[in-house]
Length: 112
Image (cartoon, rainbow, N blue to C red; front, side, top):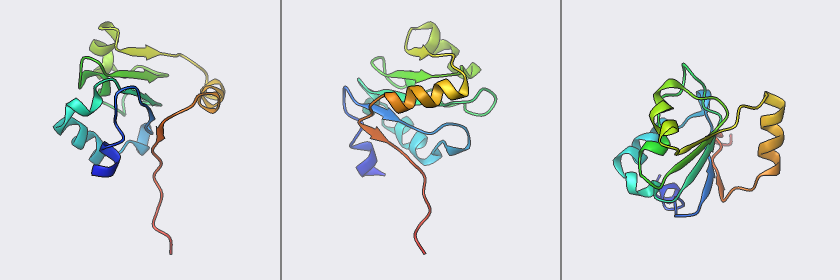
């Protein structure tokens, strides 16, 4: 986890999975070290009613780009820390394909 946290640097654009792919170990690690989010932009497909962690609330210089707004993130949205892009699912896929990221987290299983 420490190697991943070391990638959270000012100016970084980091894709993190939402929905069932949200990494709870990572959210716990970031909550314990909120300074890691200074100047970082997280891009994620967080789902209302499912995802509750607010990456943008961790640090005044943190940003979040998402496509739906889960209610627990409303305060950060009102503070201007969240860029909400209300896109259709196909438009989300297109947007992600056109955007560059410094880091993208993906869950995989160990090889057999």
